[in-house]
Image 1 (spheres, rainbow, N blue to C red):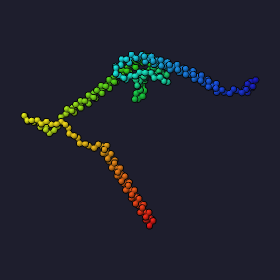
Image 2: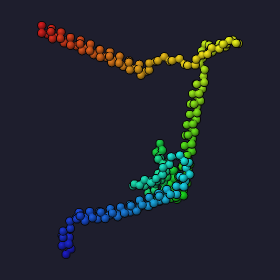
Image 3: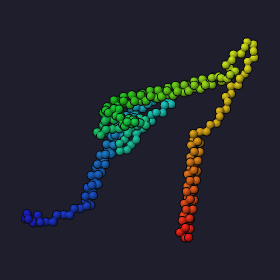
Image 4: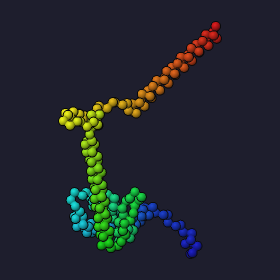
Length: 227
């Protein structure tokens, strides 16, 4: 009997049944992934609602922060264009990340929502301070440029008549402050362009002369051989 069982043919693998089992397993995994992604979105939405009062305190006219959740394989809560919050691999840890010139930097990583809110608040404050410094620097540069222009406008035109003090009671000659028209100077680009044109003309002329000499030489050679 045992020999007959061993000799009995085994059933052939059924591809249709295997496909069905694979579909069932994939559906189960998809449900798990969907549930985990839903939990991530829910946590990020709660965090966004928690920082709304902080963003409401940002001065009007400041458009640095554009908060919003971007769904996807890894949902993210963007604070601005370079900083966002995403959940860790355990789907419970908040990871506050900033993009920099040297790569991504993790500002905070915590399971507590309060700690994440404190890190986001500090980041917003630093960004506002950086904006104030940038505006102050721009004002300083603009003031220096205006002062230089005003100084140039107040500078008198020096003429030989200004060097001699007029005698007492003598009439003072009025000197026009209109600057003389500067002599037009050829720019370096025009000079380089003309030089290039002249060089190309010389090369073309040399090529034409060489070609003429070659054809004359060939004609004389053919005449000599034919003669």
